[in-house]
Structures are given as C-alpha cells and as structure tokens.
Image (cartoon, rainbow, N blue to C red; front, side, top):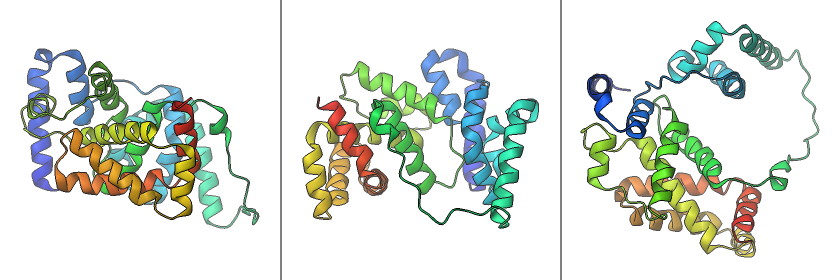
Length: 262
C-alpha cells in the first residue's frame, strides 16, 4: 500500500471506532472486515485450515504478520496449532532443500468434490479470494464476513443486486467508494449466477473443445458487471480474472452447473 492509502485507511478506522455503534450490526461487521479490524477470534479449525497458505506465504517471503494477523495471533497463543504450523514448516523447508524425495509420478486428480454438493456461496468466495490475490497487493480483509453481508443482501433482493451509490457511501463509511473486495464478491456472485442459469454441461464441453470457453465466460461476467453497475474499466479487469480462474477447473464448473440445473 502507498502511504496515502494507509493514511486513508487510518481515517476510516478512526471513523469506525467513533461511529461503529451508530451502524446496523451487519454493516458494522462488514466495515470492520473491510478495514482489517475484525474482532472475531480465530477458531482452531479456521487456523488449521489457513496454515498451508500461511506457510506458503512465509516461504515466499511475504509479510505474514501483516497479511494474516488473525492467524499469527492465534499461533502465538495456541500450542496445538503452533505445533501443526511448525511441523508443516519443517517439512516444507526439508522438501525445498531436497531432503524429501518428491514422487516423479503425477498423482491422480482428487475428484471428491464431484461427489459432494457444491454450495454456490462457497464457490463464489473461493473464486473471489483467488481473483483478489491476483489483482491486489494489499492484505486480504475478512472476506468471509464481507461475503456474508453481500450474499444476504443479494438473496433479500431476489438476486437483483445493484451496487448503488447510496450503498457505497454506507458500506465505505462515507468515503464514497465500495472496497475492491466488496465489488469483487458482488461481481463474482452475479457472474456465477448467470453462468449456472445460462450454460449446460454440454455447452461447457463444446466451448472448451473449441477453445472459446474463457472468452464466453468473460463476456458473461462483463454483462453481469454491467447489470449490477460496476464501472467499465474495473468490470473488464475483474471479468478477465474471473474467467481465467473459473476456467482453470472446468470439471468443477461443469459439476456446479449440473447440480443447479437438476
């Protein structure tokens, strides 16, 4: 982040502390998540699930305390999770040093997800996280909390969610702009809804065979962005990343579409 952006965030955090009690509970929760001030403790399960990503980031030289503050705080106080983290870190370091032999054979892909129902909100959240990790250098906020508010609002409006200026001012504490995470989640949800309603598994296979699936999904994502009133330049960037990530696993996309059309 630039110094200017950090200063803006400090101002917003101060407003949040001063005016937090005036906001509706869901809006206050979202604001804390966007500003990186979520006060919820991390459970053991959440921490254990985050450890592989935490270790990979540490091995890549990233600022893990800044990027994963809740995980870092939990590891500092929990012996059980800290032991799991230490074990994985040691294995990763040994593997990097060549002390562990990695099998040359390519393992069979794990298709367990095909046997389990795919929840649309979970799918959308995973895609949004991947997109934000690609396009943003800033630490990710508490996306699960942001997603909860966004998805509830979309459901309440029957899927006709629009990123209106008034909503932007409220959720961004009068800064006038919605956060990048909020826009990404909203667009990803709208685009995925459009896909599961418009494409069949057979159409996905045909487009894949003709090498036009990614372009087709990008067009659908841009149309969804236009529908919820995302700005043109931002919509183009997000649609490109959305299409790239979602096409990286066509088997899961096919399974999601098949499930929602049964």
